[in-house]
Amino acid sequence: MPLIASGDVTTGLQRAQRMLAVACLVVFAIFLVAQHRLVFPYHDDWGYAVLHYTSQQGGFTAQEFTLSQALHFLRDEYLGWSGRVGAMAMQVGLFKLGVDAVRHFQVLCILSSLALVYALTTNRKRVDARMLVPIVLFLGLPVPVLVSGLYWFAAAAGGIWGVPLLLYAALRVQRAGAVDVLSALLLAAACSFHELMAVTALVFLAIHVVARQCAVRSWRIPFGQIIALMLVGVAFALTVLSPGNFNRKAQTVYP
Image (cartoon, one colour):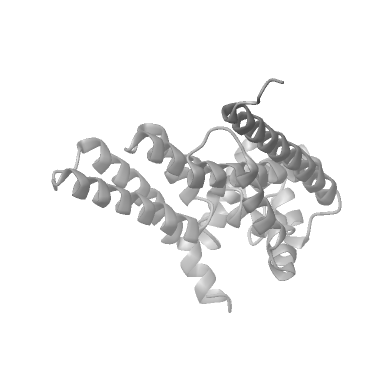
C-alpha cells in the first residue's frame, strides 16, 4: 500500500486553505455588492452630484455640467469648505456616472484595502486562510461607524476611498525597501482625501526614512527620499492648511 509523503499532505492543506480563502473572498464580494444595493445617496451626496454644496455652479440641468464647471466647483469648495479635493473630485465624477458606479467603486475600495492589509501583514502574494482575519474584523465594525461612515458616501469618500492608495504605497515601500516615484505619488494622492490620511502618509514616510537611515547608520538622506518627503509634505500642507478648513472652522460648530 503506497504511503502519502508528508510533503504531499502539507501541499494539500495549503491548497485547501487557498481554495477556502478564495471562496470566502468571492462570497464576501457578492455580499458587499448585494449590501450596497441598499445604499442610496444622502443629502451631502446629492450636493456633490449636482455641484451644489456650500458653493454652487449653475448654467446646466441635472448633471449635464462640463469639466470646467466641475473644476470651478472643486476650487470653490477648497477655498470655502474643505481641502479634501481628491475625495470631492471622486464623488463628483462617480455620481456623474451613476449611483451604481459609486456603489461598485466603494466595494472595490473595501476589497482592495483588505487584500492589501493581508499582503502587508503576511508578506505573501497568494492568499491563504489568514485572509479571513481582515474580513472578520471588517464584519465586526460597529453599526454607528457603518451608518455614519461607510454607508454615507460623502463620509466614505474621505475616510475609505483613499485607503488603497496609502496601503499600496506602503506595500511597494515594504517590498522595495525604499520609496520610489510611484510610491511617493500614491502617498501624495492619498493626502488629498482626508486630513488624517495626510497625517498618516507623512508620518509613515518620515518614519520609513528615519528607520532606513538608522539601518545604514548614516544621516545622509538620498536625494530621491528628500524629494519624496517634499512631495508628500506639500500634498499634506495643501490638504490640512487649505483655506476652506479655516473658513469652515470660523463659520460652523465643526472643529
